[in-house]
Amino acid sequence: MAAKQLDGKVAIVTGAARGMGLEVARRFVSEGARVALTDVRETEGKATAAGLRTAALFAPHDVSSEDSWQAVVDTTVAAFGGIDILINNAGIWRTAPLIEQTADGFDEIIAVNLRGVFLGMRAVAPHMRARGGGSIVNTSSTAGLTGLAEMSAYCAAKWGVRGITKVAAVELGPWGVRVNCIHPGGVDTPMTASLGLSRGPGVAAPVPLGRYGTAADIASLHLFLASEESSWLTGAEISIDGGSMAGRPRS
Image 1 (tube, rainbow, N blue to C red):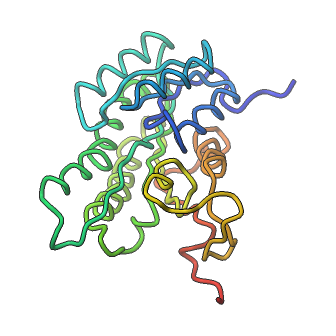
Image 2 (image 1 turned 90 degrees about the vertical axis):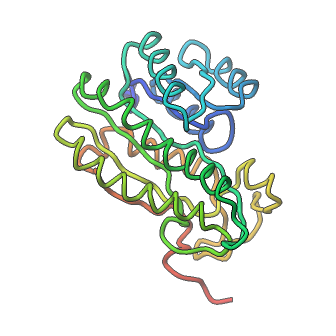
Image 3 (image 1 turned 90 degrees about the horizontal axis):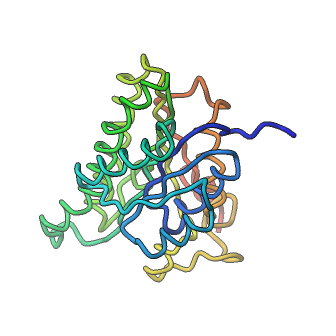
C-alpha cells in the first residue's frame, strides 16, 4: 500500500465546520493526518469531527481571540502530541460602500480575517519548531490581488494576509517552517450561497476555465502545500481562481 502524504502529521484547520475548511479536514484525514477542526459553529463542527472518528477532534474557536487560540493549541497538543500544519481558513465576508462602512464593522472583519491569521501563526510556530518544521497555509483571496467596490475592509484584510505571509516565511524559514498563502476566486461554498451568489454545479463563470471552484479544488492545493511535495516552497502566493486574475475570456 502506498504511503499517504500526511502520515503521522497533526493539523489545525480553522473554519472547518463547513465549506472549504471541512473539505480540507476530510482530505487531510484521508491522507493520514490527525486534525483539529475549529470553528464558531459548534454543532456542525462537532458532527463533522465525529464522522472522522479518532483521527479528528473539534474545538470551539474564535480566531480573533488570543485566549481561544491558546486553548485550541493546548487541546491539539494534548490530544495528538504536537502540531505540524496550520490551515488559516476561517473568515467572514461582508460588504459596504467605503463611506458607509462603520469603524466597528471594519474592525470586525480585520479581527477575523487578518488578526486571526497573525494570532494563529504566532501560537503554532514554537510547536512546529519543536517538531523540526511545519507548514502554514494562509487564505487570502483574489480580493487580496485587486480592489473591489464595497469591500474596503475585506480587501484590506486579504492584502494584509499577503504581507504577513511574506514576513512569516522569512522569520520562520530557519526553523523549517514554510508559510504560503492562497488566493481563491469564486468558489461554491455555504458562505457564498448564504449571500445569494449562485455558484453551484453547472453554473457558468466568467473566467477562462468557465466554472466556479469547488471546495475539493481548494483542498487539493492545501494538500500539496501541507505535504512534502512542496518542501522547497515558502513565501509563495498561489491564485486558484479558474484563471480570473489572468483576464476575462471573450463574451
